[in-house]
Length: 398
Picture: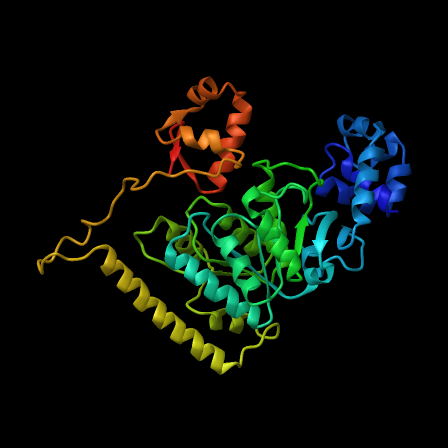
C-alpha cells in the first residue's frame, strides 16, 4: 500500500493538490497507480504530466521504505489514522509526511512560534519566556528550525525537558542550516519530532520554505509572531493561520525597530496583540491550563525584571557624559556597526561575503562564475533568512 503512495509522490509535477485530486478521484493510491493514461486525464491530470508516470521510480520508493525501517522513522500518508487532524483541515494538506521522532506528538495541541532570523535581544528574551510558559501550560511548541526566533523557541522547550516539533523546508536527511544538526538531535532526544513533506535528500530550495510554513500553521491552534520584518516568512505563516481560521498573536515592539514592523502590520490586519502568555492561554481556553495564578504572577514578575534589565543595558551601552539632554533621534544609527559573516558551511557563505557592498545579479554572476538562476535562488534564500535587502536590482547585507 505505502509503495503506491510513494510511487505517486515521486512522480514529477504531482504536488499535494494533484496528489489529492488523484486519491479523491480513484479512491486509493493503488487504484490511481493501476489506472491508465486516459483515466488520469479523465481525473483532470494533463497529458504533459501523465507522460512522466511511466518512468521507473522503484529505487526511490525502495530507499524510502528502507529508511522507514529505522526506529522512530515514519512515512505517514493522508489516510493514516495518526495523520494530524488539524493539518488535515487545511485546503492544501501534504499527502505524505516524513517524520523522525515521536509521531504521536503531531496530534497534540500546538502553538507555532515564529519570527525574525536576526532578532533583538528583547525578542530572544520574549521567545524564551513565551515558549517556556506555553510549553508548561501544555502546548507543544512548533517552529521551523531556522536561525533566530525559531532556534530560540526550540531551545527554550528543550531546556525545560518538553518536546518540540520542527517542520523543515528540506528533506530530513538534509538539515538546514547545517549548524542546527545538533539542535535537531536534541529535539529528538527530548521526545520531539522533525517533520517534512519533501523527499529525504531534498536540499535547501528557496521556494520550499514558504510552502513548509503552511504545515507549521496547519499543525497549530494558533501562531505567535515574536518579531518580524514587513517582508518575512513569519508573516507568511501568520497569514496562512488567518486563512485557516486559526488564532494569530503578535507581540508589539518599538516603532524604531524594523523587526517590529511585521508584528504591527499583523495587528492592523486583525492579529491579537499579546503582552503575556495569559492572553494566549485565555484565547485557547479549553486546550490549555488557564487558572495557574502562581505561574501568571511569576510571568509578570519576570517581565518587570526584563524591563529593568533592558533599561540598564541601554544606559550601559550609551553612558551620558553630562546632564545635557540630547536629541532622542541622535543615537539612531542607520549604518552597519559590525562586520557580519556566515559559517563557512552555510550554502550561501561565498555569496553573502560579496554583499558587504551592493551588487547586481550580473556582477555576482561574473564574480562567482555561477548560473544566474542559481544566484537568484541563493539570493532568495538569504532574503528568506532576513540576511540581505534588495533595492532596485541591487542586493546587500542588512
